[in-house]
Length: 588
Image (cartoon, rainbow, N blue to C red; front, side):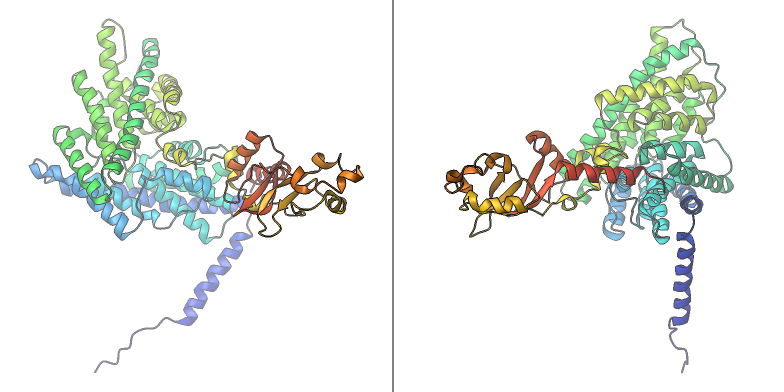
């Protein structure tokens, strides 16, 4: 008979671990906030770098395994199977379903103080691994971004950091993720400041830069210091620079079509299919059919990008245009039907194809003109498409320069990125990442009125030091209350039910108070204002502010269930606004 007994937890060991955790937190909390953000930035960079490299290796291995089945007809079902499996894993097993990553991070930074669920650090990685490797049209960048941001949020939560640091390190995780996956530290910093955080401040840039550099070091140690896309050296001339103006217009059109198609596909599939699995099946089948006729649209498409900017791709203009449209459709279907992935990689491919397509048209219109070549326009087109879809021209410029080494093309890159972004904003006010949040009314960027007001609750503004009166009261009985009250207005309540009936304002009754015969004969009901615009504590401060604007009132009664709760005044709102603005703009 065995004498083995099940092991039991050692209470002393648990107590020691808890004590160590408490001591570490206590030491950390007493550090200068800049040191806190530096330490967390390094830790976040390490973990985010490992996550990005791990996803890359996973995609390579799984794609290599599935490659043995290519050429067989049933491969058309792989994208459908991948999207269905992604939905099952994320929705029913991990229970972290919905969205393609970056909007959730922006929402967290804008509304939730940088708080993200820990499971988001791995859920989207698993989902994108399945979706992309099986042939879905998406990129691995957005899942890595939310993974890095969730890692940063969790680490900040462990150290019990304040909200400002938690927001910064959530952005740091996103920066490290982009830097690691592209071997592009500057692009990681710029993407986070421009797209995720929405502001450029030193206190945020410090942990973001440290995390981005750390993530890049991890990537280079494990994968080597390689430029993802190589190209021959360009000798850019004046004709190329002038021609990029037309390229900006062309790619702006492609960007607008892509943004609108992505929105339309998602809404249409949601209307057609109430069950997520049927939606995944239908969308996956269409993606599979697209990859059968246009193999280039599957996955992230980096292989074709390398051919384009190296000048090794050739095709007729009509086929290239069709390929761009099919990539748009396949990506929209992949993400709209429940697949996990991002729009970075598809945007790079579509931009590269767009540049190639534009160059073909250019040589037809100006056959004798001297242009550097299709490879230059393919490279510049990537920056243009990224700038247009993300509304982030600096991200487009620095990412393309770092991942291609295209410093020799910096002039057309600068021109086309800013011009494309400006043109797209004329047709689409919000980027691919922002439109969902804007539609829900939760796109609150730093230092804007909406962001500041979102931190103020109506209950904080409520003033309750008012003296209620009754409709049957004569003005003579009101005089002692006027002398006692600090207010120039009085809420009128029904004597039996207590329901709010209206307001009496001192300016409306002051002329009667000096006439004895009127004071004894006029009752409150005769002088009160019953048609009063009221607000509720369930209203947002932004809505209350709009009510102030439309009514030109200086104070508004707060009424719920017909009961008067108090007043909200413009003066009190302005005071809280000033305090919140100071809190959001001060240093750590």
